[in-house]
Image (tube, rainbow, N blue to C red; front, side, top):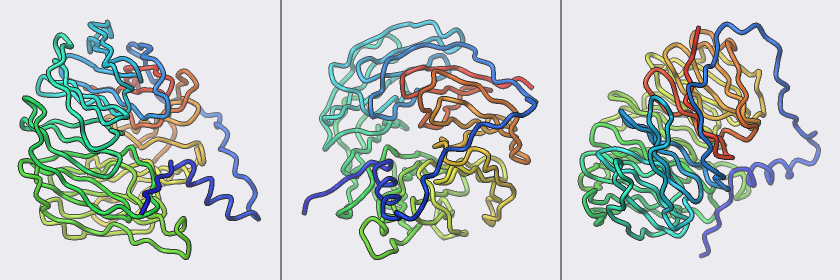
Length: 375
């Protein structure tokens, strides 16, 4: 059987084409509003084009690492000054992962390289089973990398030697996903095609539990796509995941018991913060849900169909990017729009990344911005 992978955009277009009686949907126009806060750019750098890939920056206590298709960079975290730039020698399609002294990027031909975070020297490079579409992660001396064929491998951080491999059967038709893994308390959490969520032990790669977030439904293969194409959200108590054309569900992080589930579709992602779960759905609406019950606390649909990114909480605010390169700031308490700032005009696909009391944002054209919020 030949595996067929479609980009989520192509999939959505094909689904829309199946309903010829529906009028084309236009992205919501930006509303006028009175700003109650300001999105401040501390520094910015141009990395270069990401191509079709979704690249995210890696952040440590002293540095920020960014990548384009051709280059890997280190910047001073406070000033944004470039410290080094290297050329991996392959097309970077997944990255950047940073931690424990290493900087990690993957390539579109299955290359995986680890560099010294201080001087950028190559520590090791190995070949994995297929293209790397997400940022590799590192914890407790183990590098975890997910490949385009759905496999997850644990590698020794010292030399790249494979320690374990997790693989599962992929449906004939699945969405090409840039979702990687989340590591928390010795567990690797990852969502898969057909709406499955797995918790894998970090040290040995043994499946601790597996659960169904969503079940495929419909009469055609396209209608039955119900893949988890975004990162799970996890903390010490709870892990949540959402499927495209499917459901949202939260589970006990240790045992895998279902806490609650509800109908909702998203290819963007979600975030746990305090007593809330924040979600950007497939239409671009942003929700705040009660993390214990899944009940809706508020909904903001002012940016419908603007291809909004996953939300990222920064103190009592939510940062979200859109397809025109705008960064939007919402109030976590009621969802009201507080501020807006335009970047380079290209899409912000990946969720912002934490950096102290602010965040890092990378656009698809390669602009990297360190931002903070001023009330």
